Image (cartoon, rainbow, N blue to C red; front, side, top):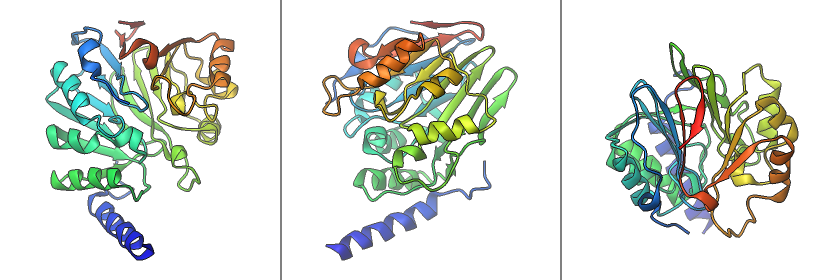
Length: 292
């Protein structure tokens, strides 16, 4: 058994080496059927927080026509995520981000990669032994894609009034896979979003200690609203008007935890939850953010 596990670890490590760009380079329902109706406008930034149950998947449509997908939900999410993207007229994903290797974030990645043309793939420099992670790497390899490591300070793109940049992970060695989470800050005009994956309090503390601008109008709450994330200190600096929690109804983890909800209420943040509202869409024209 140990031999088989070691052999699997070696295979995944070798596979990751093939697709990795060197560090110097820059309970599920068909949520698509009841999603809020929205047609993307050319001058708008639209951020879709998909209801994938107990997991994460975020679609971003930029005003420059580019598309980003951050995570693809838990195992079994491939088909509904693909369906939702196609309903939005998506044919190509310019930037694909796997925040970290946990299955509730990359469960549908292999299917998405196989279905769409992909320009660039980003993920933190950490491996995992799960079949889900292996399937994602195989899909990346089959398309001839390379992985660009996601880490704090790496710019995804920047042009006049529009920017996407990683603010975490700040380090390279964590006990918890959650703290490897790739955190994405998006700025459009005077509006902004901070999308945190499963980043926990350690990652939040590191971001606070950095010189990066973390202020955001919309915060994607870390780790599905777990008490391990969203500290009062982090909330004070980010100072969001809205918070979105991607979470499954009546999940076994008790997410979102009451401590997190209390922190958000104390900070005066308006909270939206996918377990209560389904798929949630925020839109910005560069001046104001509004919920569809």
